[in-house]
Length: 153
Ligand SMILES: [Zn+2]
Image 1 (cartoon, rainbow, N blue to C red):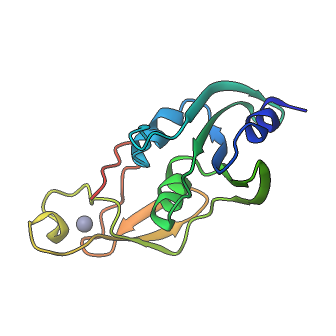
Image 2: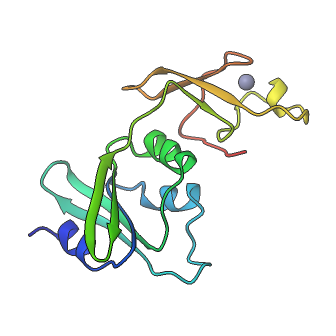
């Protein structure tokens, strides 16, 4: 049994985000606004030895299921992540994150002159032009999103 299995088994209801790229766990927490304010247990493990990829980060959140927006953020920040849904201590669903063809609403365009940053009630729309390279392009102004400087709407 590896450490990630142990982590999965200790949760009764909730989500385990496994195989987060090493060093990105805290960024994922912030992006998903996971801060423990709902009273549920949140566990984060950084630099866990991983057979597949040297080291990884793991986040375990009790009583929280990810929404599509969360999964899309995760796919951009930590493309190798897996989402494990736990019910009654059992792993009931496990899937890898994947990028959709476009992502609306969540990422702010990095172009300050973009219409989506003008104060108008226009939601951002990013087209995923390269899923492997995680290249996202603003549909309104054509700016390529800098994924090292993500900001959320
Ligand atoms: Zn734009």
